[in-house]
Image 1 (cartoon, helix red, strand yellow):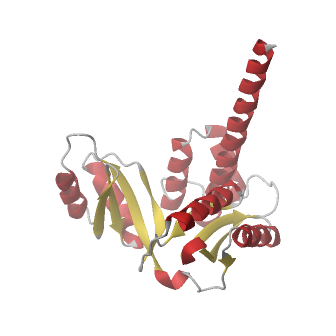
Image 2 (spheres, helix red, strand yellow):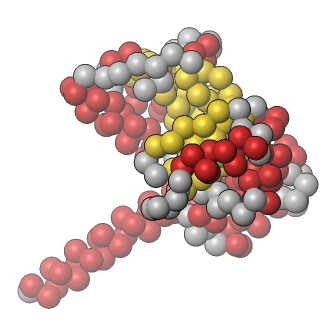
Image 3 (tube, one colour):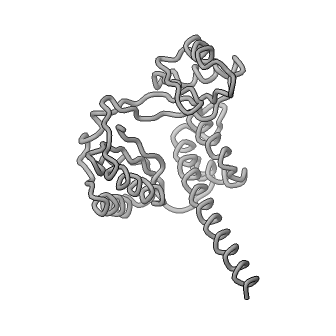
Length: 239
């Protein structure tokens, strides 16, 4: 009996992992489809598509899944309703300002589910502009800094590459750029031989806030629930 229970536990755990992996691939596919539709299906000509593919590859998304998502975006593959990118604005526990970036083929379903998640967490979904005013869109590049490496030297290279600002935290240098300069700064860093862990456009807060221990726990629960929602791509806050 013990052997049977052990095997059942492994199967259940593996099933959860596969399910989560499937969700991650679905989220990547939606973004790749949107970028292919908006800028064409060639990553060498479409920088935003290249970024989306790079992120998918970091999560080991199979090449055939990536190619299918591109073809769906370019119209070569007719598969389901059109996917739209929508950013919802909300207030979380402790009055945290939040932007929830989604990719959906059903606006009504998504807004209903996002609103329900916020309400159950003690937050609320806001009107357009209610939180966005406190964020600015910037380019964001993450460069890992290995043990023994001088972060100041890495920072100098980032500035030489065209960075607007930098932040060193958790053994990584976060490089901020103007949105229109993201591509050139990333390419300059790559020419310098810098390893890039992640890159993309993000929403950086203008005014930040802090949370009490109790509010932090509630906020973490909200983040987890939002992350599990199939249409949610990214979440930005002003913590």
